Amino acid sequence: MDSSKPSLARIKIKFPEQIWISEIFKNYPDIKMEISHFLPYDLEKSIGNSLIEILHYDIDSIIEEISHHPSVFELSVIEKQENKVKFTVKTKDPYLLYAIIKCGVLVNFPVRVEDGYAYWRLISSRDRIDQLLTLFEKKNINFDLLRIGVSPYTIEDDKSKLSFDESNILDKAISLGFFEIPRKISLEELANEMGKSKSALSVMLRKIIKKKVLFEK
Image (cartoon, rainbow, N blue to C red; front, side, top):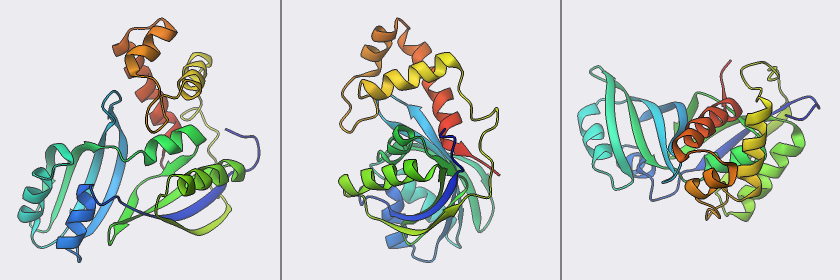
C-alpha cells in the first residue's frame, strides 16, 4: 500500500446483464440486498463466492430463481426466515474484483445493492483509486463516482500486510497477466513459473486476495 494518506471513494457500479443480480432486480424491484463478502472460489475458472443477505416478502421464489440462473454454479442457504435469507452463491466473477486486486484497492464490506447497482466504498491512496477508475473506463464498466475524500479508516495493519513471499507471488501474477481480462497465463502455467504446485498456489493466492481486497471496520 502507498505511504500517502488513504482516500475513501464511494462509487456506484452496474452489474452486467448476464449476472443473476441484474435479473433479480428486474423481477423484484423492491428487494433489499447486501453483499457481506465476495472472494474468489475457483481461480482457474474465475468463479467467485459471495455471502448475500436478502430481505423480501417472497423469499422462496427469489431463491428458486437465483439457484436456476445460468450464471450460478451453486447456492447454499445458511439462514432463512419468513422475509429474510442469508446464503452463499458461487457465480462467474465479472472481473471487477480482479481489477481491484491489480490496482491494490480495498473494498469496505458490506456492499449495499439497489436497483441492480452495487454501492462500493473503496479505500487506498488517491492515485491507486484513480488508476482503478481509469481501468473501469477502459473496460466500459458502467459506474459513477459519487464521492472521494480522505479515508477515516487506518488500513496499514497486520491483517492487510503481505509477507515477502506473498508480495513476490502477487507481483509475479500481475506482471504475467494472471489478472488481465482475458487472462494471459493460466493458474497451472503460473504455478510452473513459480516452482509451486497448482493447488498450493491457488491457496496462497486466495489468502493474498483476502488480505488485499477485504476490509471491515
